[in-house]
Image 1 (cartoon, helix red, strand yellow):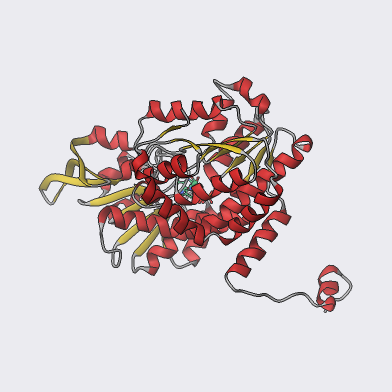
Image 2 (cartoon, helix red, strand yellow; image 1 turned 180 degrees about the vertical axis):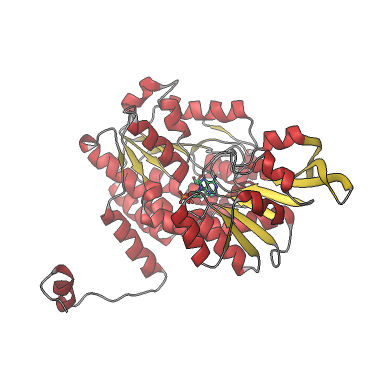
Length: 427
Ligand SMILES: NC(=O)c1ccc[n+]([C@@H]2O[C@H](COP(=O)([O-])OP(=O)(O)OC[C@H]3O[C@@H](n4cnc5c(N)ncnc54)[C@H](O)[C@@H]3O)[C@@H](O)[C@H]2O)c1
């Protein structure tokens, strides 16, 4: 079997969406044209564990055009777009193992299929394949020339393995490339997280108190966009510099135990565990909404919330669960209050919307595919370490992206070049 997907009949809609995304991925398309001629990935087997979206479909197609045989599985049980998976299987003859809403067992069986595929190169968004290659499937790591990691949380996990001296394959930290995190994490997550919240709830953002946990790349993007739509944004942080930055960017900064009382909507974007937990739920207003756009569904302690709730109503609206808990006595009046969890606490932009727009994934996936080509060409030189993407790749992508946007920039004059490289000239 070359696929395990929801329904092959969904392929027509998926194909349309893949082609729509392709229009907005000019840099990746240029790489694809070159790959068709040069076939730099010829004979290589690639297992990609990524969000199965229309943009990812175009990445996978590019790798196939480059001569690779590719298997795609999901990097999150709720992020698969079933129509895209169907079209990849039917129209593009790609091995796809991903079903939206798959349970934990199916999710892991699909990951294992990706390892049984005997890849030479892997791609992860959250390091789940690499986790298997360091636990149950250690032997399979021998065949891996190198592995790409797409997200902050994955890079953190892999650097932890490297620090312990246990990393068993070379890694390229695609997430850490400027052409990835400055754009995908900031503008992609900023826009698509709001998109997910709005599709899930249909609330008006203007005038709402929105609490943003984490002011890294994703948090900055989300805070900026929420403010742009008229929300009163509060930021919580654990890092002094980031907190200072948020304060000077004009946001209210405070600890979560204070923000918990004020927020109408909470969004976690930290990569950390239990950022919202019992002590915060207790303080929240009736009707507060909580969601997450960090990689794993650990940022909101949904199990803890369930334990303290009197009752839970699933799906009061698509992607919204209502948790009813005892409200504290205020001026002698107590009762039940509701807290709404969006997208089960999983990445809301992928659970309830379509993930990042194609234009920004153009940069992330061009970085992915060029990093893959680099691994295939240079694997003999690579050790079991976490490497950055080369600056040449970053600059090439930035140059072409600017060109595709019709933007030209200045060049250094010979005088300026000399001045910037010298130290003699002073005051
Ligand atoms: N939704 C998406 O599509 C998407 C896209 C890219 C990245 N991500 C994920 O989003 C998460 C954040 O990524 P990033 O690139 O912004 O990371 P980052 O490291 O740039 O930022 C994370 C921030 O959270 C802060 N933080 C950590 N623990 C905290 C806590 N308990 N309370 C408040 N703040 C806390 C850190 O100090 C840091 O400033 C990661 O899990 C990443 O994998 C999601």
